[in-house]
Length: 492
Image (cartoon, rainbow, N blue to C red):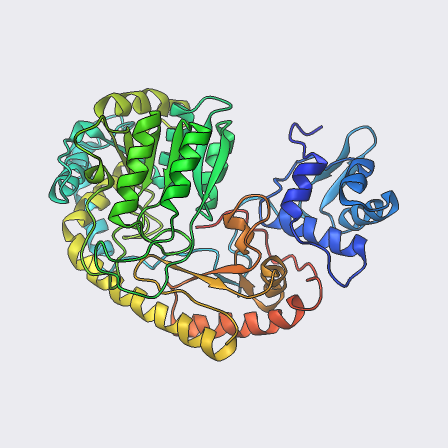
């Protein structure tokens, strides 16, 4: 019997607007199927009893039973007497990140190919490796010279930092999960942006947090010099949220937000930090996309620089990563915080990880001094990708809206109708894997949005928009059928 169980109310929230012109049982089965495929209902979760769900959705029990039967026949549910209906994936497909099969184009990954100097850096790191081989190789904190280089980068950006304030992790995702596990207790409230990076939501929930959402909207056209842009955060609403919720922690992406592309203005940063300081809230600033600037004029200081020096500051924990700027295959991230917080994180880290790979740290240490040149290369790649997305949306879907992106990796595209989930599911049959808008929110929201990466080639965009065009004809009118080219619960 599964330990995870969805109540009828929880499933109703996840379903969102699910009714279509199809029979109710078929539409309900289609939406539950997508929730399983998209990872929003984990494998092994026990679904609500037929009677409970029927009452909640104001359906007959016969209708719900027919939907569950269709899910069983498709291999998405196992029903055992006395144990209820438990979600699964059909056939031999595993509930793990997958490539989606040969020939599939995977747009669930908003990531760039490896930076051009990476191969040479890897060779140099291999030559450097022998002097580390006499050591055991279990490195829970990070190589001293890599920590020193990371600390120096913060110092050059205007935030004095020493190596003792840096902890190297296995990517930013481990950093998020480690922070949540270390600083949260079950039942603590966490302020989190919606939409946001979905695996941050999962990490906070696994730590037992109660999530308190604040909305971020895509940026509007207008000036984008420092201090002049209109950002997508409601500073007054955030202050009210802090007063009401008294959160233990706030997880924020202040620069080139994933997925909207928005960046906090200096005034919003000051007000958020003041609100956090007033409640003793730990602010986690995810800066994994912060250096992926395309054409914003100027550079923001690190978030702690916006705190009021005349008042006690909120604790600020910052997350960085090599994966977005250098290559996704380099699973190296880091945490910058005060020494006392770093010591707590170091003490907690061995519970899930005994060390960060040495060779990958050596590669990153080789590349960080070249980051200015790499940033120029990335800027041009992202500029070309952004242009292709804007062009193809205008030509293929003139009713869709694309906000400006002045940096980051994604476009948060408004598709005008609440069919993002159906569109994502239908696109699989045309060779495209793409994450539906609700993957980035809570409880089924954002059906009118689609995240499109700006990191691919013109040829790949031509393929993707051909697939979206064909899928749109299905999604806009009928519930999408299931095609089992692969389940992708993870999103990058």
